[in-house]
Every structure is written in C-alpha cells, then in structure tokens.
Length: 395
Ligand code: UDP
Image (cartoon, rainbow, N blue to C red; front, top):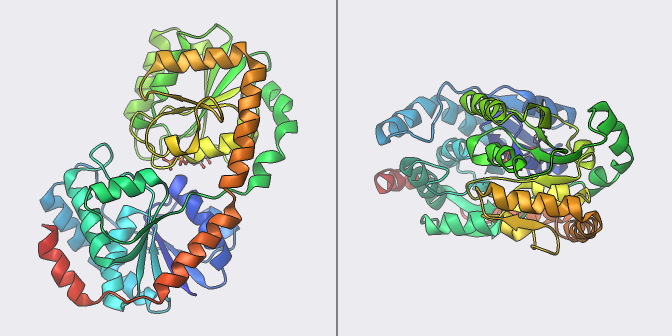
C-alpha cells in the first residue's frame, strides 16, 4: 500500500516521533509531506524515509476566530491543491496532526483517496479554541474513513466533542531494546553532569505552561536539599515567556543550585537512566504521554499527573505513582517516598518495565496500524460532494 503521510510540524514532538516509527515500514512506498522545515525532516531522512516540505504561510492558532479560521482555509488552498496532486500517486492519505487534517481532508475529496486521521490530541477546551474543536470534529466526521486515537482518553474526548468516525485506539509503540541497553552509562552521565551525589528528578518535555515544569520547581521546596530537577526539552512553539517565568521562579525561590536545563536532547533513554525518578507534571490531560512509557521501559520510577492518557499507562502503587495535576505538595511527597525507600521504588520500576515491554512494543503497534490501514483502503472514498455538505454543517 502506498501512503502519503502529512504532518504540519518540522519540529520533533511526540506526534512526530510516533510518525517516524509508523512510516518506517512503508519507506519503500510512502512519502512524508511536512508543512514546515525543521529537525524532523532530518530525522526522517536519516531513517531513509522519503520526505518533502511544502511550506505554508499560515498558522491556525488556538485562539483563532471563525473569520480567521475561514480565511486560513482560503490561504491553505495552494497547499491543498499541491497535496491533492501528490496524493494521486498514493492509495491513502494519513493526516498526523490537526492542520494536516485540514489540508488532507479537502485534498482527499479532490483526489478521491481515503483519509485516515491519527489523533494525538485531546479535543477539548483545555487544548483548542471552540472554533478549532469544531473544525477538527467536522472534518474528521465528514472526510476521515477512520480515526486512530493514541489513547482511550483521546478517543473519549473526540467522541464527547461530537466525533463520529470509526475510531480505534492504538497506543504508541517503542523500540524496547533502545531503553534497556543504556543502564551502564548511568554513572558516567551523572558524573558528566556533575550530579553524581544528587538525587535527580528528571523531567522530559518541551517547555510549555501546560507541561507544568513550574509544578516540579515548586515541589523542590518540599523536598530535601540534595534533590535536583533536571529539565530536558526546549520551548518548541514560541513559549519564551514561560521560560522566562521559570527562571524568575527559580531565582525568587533561591533554587538555582538545584535546577538544570539541558535543552532538547536526542539521547533521552541515556538521560532517563541517569535519573533516580522521572516526574510528569502536565496540568491539562495528557493525550498519551510518551515520556511516561519511555521511563517505564528504562526501569526508572515514574510519577505522573493523573489525567488523560497517563491514567491508562500507570497503575498507581504497582507500576508508578499518580498525583493530582497541578499539586506540587503531592508530587513532593512521592519524590520523598522514592528517595526514602529506594528498594520499594526500584521494585515498582521493575514492575513498570515488565508491564511496558508487554503493552508498548513497536512491532505490535505497527501490526495494528497495518491492519487498520488495510481495512480502510478497501472502504468507500470521499467525494467532492462531501466538501459541499461539510461547509455549511461546520459553521
Ligand atoms: N523528547 C526528546 N528530546 C527532548 C524532550 C523530549 O526526544 O529533549 C521526546 C520524548 O522522549 C518523547 C517526546 O519527545 O518521546 C514527547 O512526547 P510526549 O507524548 O511525552 O509529549 P508531546 O510532545 O507529544 O506533547
């Protein structure tokens, strides 16, 4: 089957890393089309996955108004036409992000190729403006022959927002070996970081208000002096103001000597292995939470915020800890427990590793995706009349 994958981002987020793994088996007969230049293109090319960039001049922001949304679609038309032309060479269009859905939906109607939408987002007011929620739902309902949701939480939010397309949950899969061969680097890396004698709480995420780095900084005040927070990740989508706020918070609390920022890193498994525990602190429901599974696979204790997909990944007290989102005191309590009872936290981490190996193997995920794509490639296609029906229905 020949697949045209679409993704709006040139940056490397969870949705893009998932696409990298999904596209790899199709690399002899697929094209990944990005709407922006960036390091994601390099990753795809390193994996020998055919890639092209069709840059778009517009950005549909979370606060877009109806008018802005409509005019955005107008501006997208040259891109839509280009994608429609490209897609005639393929059996199926696979939209991996919301903006890719907008472009892919209309293109699929023009080229009469079936459209699959991989939903990596919780479609709710915490993550999208009302207009963008409506846009996503109406496009998916009208044009997507199938939706692949990355967790039960994303599926439930999609349906609650009015999503009716056939939806299957497929969890992200991981190359398990990559997380298991790194333990021996632990002490070297801790030394290199100058943190060998510290109790390291890792945090792996782009820097963004809803990812809640400020919650971990606040939690440090309730932890012992030798606890250090290690932040791995960068502000990917212009969250510079938040980064400044984090530095102000650290300065005001006098925590400079207990916090390290490493920026974006591509050696996440190694860095996780150097940590004593990893904290996930999203203040809004996490659609899936790749970092949680990666921590489990690495055999490192994980404390996650109890909302969205995180609840499906961690069984509290058995494979990790769940704390209420936005609660630094509860987070500190769990960190302190892991520090005080290392044997118990190691036992939990071992359980988590065994559980994650069973549930998140990339081979199984890719098999599920392949079956889903096989089924939908044989189903009916959208036609241009769908566009005419969708337009008034949406607004
Ligand atoms: N990640 C990375 N380098 C970093 C920070 C994060 O490669 O410096 C990866 C991380 O390992 C994970 C992904 O980015 O695979 C983030 O996915 P997640 O589902 O946790 O969050 P999202 O970015 O999708 O909101």
